[in-house]
Image (tube, rainbow, N blue to C red):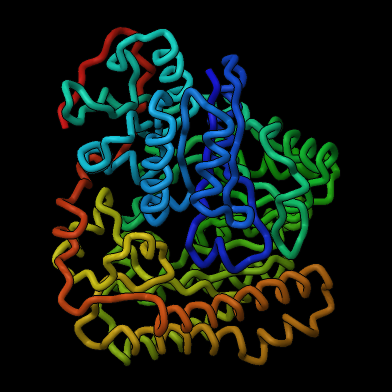
Length: 509
């Protein structure tokens, strides 16, 4: 079949502000197996430009696909534009199958199939095996009930087959790197870059995380094969920066050390950036020299908050002591730390924000990423927040960079002032300025300058949007009324047993 993979342009600040763009790993991960199954596959990456919706439709029609597959890493906030794009494509190409995959449609399949008749099938959970089996069934005219991990319409009503099994061997499916022109993708200030995954999932139980249940179980690539692939990307395609999309790549110290040693043995000069937990950094104090030698330049530490009671509420599982120690250890080994700090888990007061600022300053991170709590219906945290008031009805703003829930103690403008003040105080303190402009390590100095420039532009963009473009409501619905009832009973999108090959029962919507 002739298949078009569409990466929709995303309105989020992180997509529009940087001059750099990274390739859509999720679509490439599905594209590789589809190519190997004999299909003709093309990627339309509309982030470049970004392309207008009219241009995307024109290019889609010109390609003339048998099936159009939409997906986006910014799954919830990307849904509105994917909805419009898929509706237009279905109208222009009524014979083409319209397929949709990602985190948001995995859980909201009932709503989407009820409200958007132009979408034919939703892929739930990991897409590599499911997409191949789905396209084979469509091509052969076989019933979709034989394919695990799908949602579609049965007798006109939304229905789903049983969940697919998690992929046990992540090396069994390759990334479709041939679908992109590596010269177009960059990060870290114009350096050629890609996104990769060493592992999927996370063994920890943070109750707000929208990714953990999607992947169901923590698994990893073969360390040596993965290191060889990164070396190949550098040698054959000139890739300089590797951005890890893993939620927690360092979960197993033994496996992670194998990867670091394998990459060091490849002897390639790479810049590695990604996310991990502070307690893993503390655990690995004796091998952090290997991190640096392998090329690690920055870790985003998902600390989320500086208040012990809040960390307990969200079941983070870490401690403020470990957070401070992780930052100290990374600096000792020449690796930048980016602390995430999330406003709104609880309804903070001025005193809470002031205390949070003082604690962040005592942590002394190199960089700070301030976010707003954004509850997802399939997470346990959603049940805790279900009676809070929604002030942001535009779902494209549910991207972690906009306040979406009201707080009883202060209006949104005051929350914004506190968040921006905290960002400015952390990033403009003398230590941070010295590291940005005067530190001796040129590699870290360039990294700090690039991030500072991005932060300056994002800061101005957020403030301007808040007052001129964003629309909030004062008397919005409660969270559960806005999104629907909690789905935490369905948090795991896949099962851990082997795939069943016999016909499967259909779950009514």
